[in-house]
Amino acid sequence: MGLSPNEMREVFQKTVIVRRPTHGIISGYHELPYICLGASLSSGAGTTEVRGKVQVSPRFIIRPPQLEPSYEEIFGEDNVDAALAGRVFGFLGFRGRPVECKSEHLEVKQVDASVDSVLSRTLDELERYEDITTGLIVTPNSRYYPVSIERFISSILEDEFSV
Image (cartoon, rainbow, N blue to C red; front, side, top):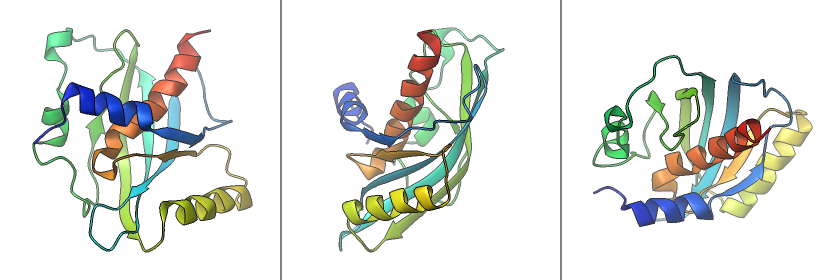
């Protein structure tokens, strides 16, 4: 069962972008590493941690809106499995933005700690490695983390195209 437009909007709006990249943004071309955290869906609590990289580049193929893939076509009826090891997918929601956006690197794991604890450790890790290119996102629903990643990308594109 997929998300209704209202449910998708709610996940999108309740996503918290804790940290944005401060380096590596080049107009039209980005490689955006991210870490997305959310409460685990499995019993026993914990945190689902998704690490990946998204490539954003100018979009040379212009498709009519009715030929754009739907969320269900990209992620399937059963949404995203927590045991997922990798998947190539595009993002929706960038109408009027001349970009192509896809993810080819993905790592999903379960961590036996609270979201706050993992968030604190991840911020410390990024600071320790002086990483200024990785975004950090907290999703309200880890099953639909791609919607939260889309929110992260959208915020960066909004800044880029508002200039």
